[in-house]
Length: 317
Image 1 (spheres, one colour):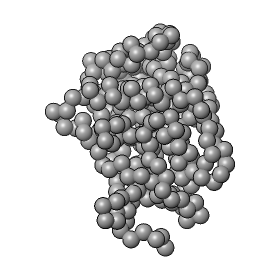
Image 2: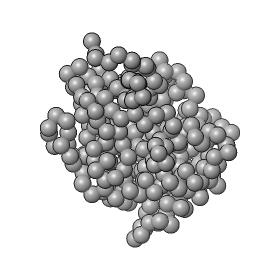
Image 3: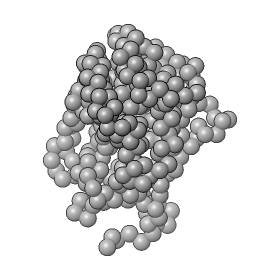
C-alpha cells in the first residue's frame, strides 16, 4: 500500500498515531501514520514544526506528505530523548535542564503565530482559552471520578469540582500571549548534534507563560526532588525581565495542578478505553505532584473537596 521498503515500528505515544523508521542505506526518516485526527496529527504537526524551525528552534522537517493515505515522512532525530539521557545518573541533570530552559525561552519569544501548511492554507495557532482549560480539567471527572466514586457521590463531586476549577482558572493572572507546546517535558525533547530538538508539538496553542514550565518542572514521568524543582524554577525566573513573580507563581501552581488532574483523567482513559494499562502506574505520581502544589492557599476549596473524596490518593506517601 505504501511505497516504503524498510519500515520498522518504533515506540509510540498516548495518541492515535503510529510511528515507523524508514531506513535506506545510511539514511533514515520517520513515517507518521494517523487514521484518526488526521488534520491535527499531520497538517498541524508539520505547520507547528515549520513555525519552530523558522524561529531557529530545532523541529523535524517534512520530507513527504500524503494526506489522503494518512501519513507524513519527517526528519529522524534518532532515539536520544533527554529522558533516556537523564536516566543515567552520571549525567549532569542541571546542565541539561538549563539547556532546555534556554530553548523554552526561545519558544516563548516566537512572534509569528501563523504559517502556510502543506495543504497550502494559512494555519494560525489558536488561543489556549479558559474553556479549553475547563474542558481538560473535566477529564478528571469523566474518567477517574467516574471509575472511583459511586453515582450519588460522583454527581455532587462533579458539580463542586466544576465550580471550583472554574474559579481557579478565572484566577489566572497572566495573558495568553506566548507559544505553549502543551506537552513540554523531557520525553518530547531530544539531543540532536548537541542541540535540543522539539517533537510532539501538534497540540501547541497561544497561552500562559507558566504552562510549559509547569509541564517541565512537574513532570509525571521523571521524578525529581523539590530542591531540584525549585532550582530549575529559580533559574528560569532569574532569566526573565519585567516579570511579575507573584503573578507567575500563582499561575504556575494553578496550571500545574490543573495539568495533573487532566493527566489523571487522560491516563485513566488510556487504560480503560485504549487498553494502555501501563499509564495507570503513573497516576500515583500525578497525585504526588498535586500534593506538592496544593498547599497554596488558593487551593483551599479544591484540597477540601479532594480530601473528602480521594483522601487516600491525595495523602499517600
